[in-house]
Amino acid sequence: MNPFAALPHLAEFLDFLNNPEWRAWPFNSGYGEHLLPALARLVFVVIIIGGILFFLRLLFGPGGPLRDKELEEEARRETEQERAELEERFAKGEISEIEYRLKMKSLKD
Image 1 (tube, one colour):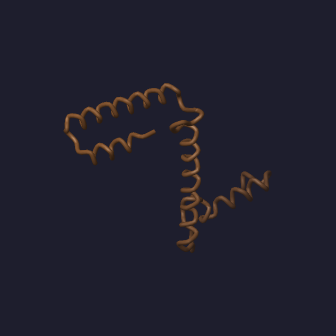
Image 2 (tube, one colour):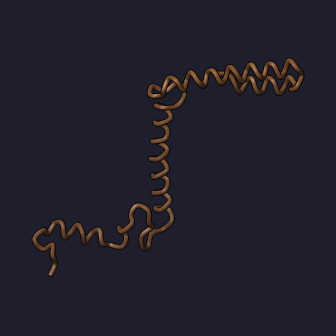
Image 3 (tube, helix red, strand yellow):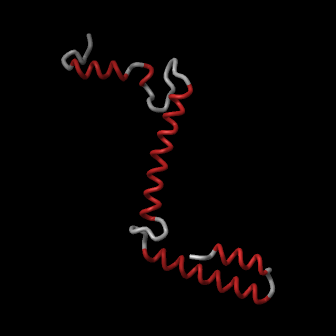
């Protein structure tokens, strides 16, 4: 006897989930499935995770509205210190002008 006989909709739903194609959805390919549906699911998951990471980057990345202001100040001080060290190394002749320009370009705000 089915213990869910009193709840026919729940029993139907559990029978539906017991179908082998739905046991591990969305991370299985099911039976008789081709490559494209599996790739479509993979692309869908990548888009969702990429969207989450994009919005986190917008909110907490450099210049983001939820980023801690102390982090911005610390990053600014480190950049100024690196520029001063680079100018000092260039003045001493430890690095070439091309290397100096490339590194200064990478330190631009």
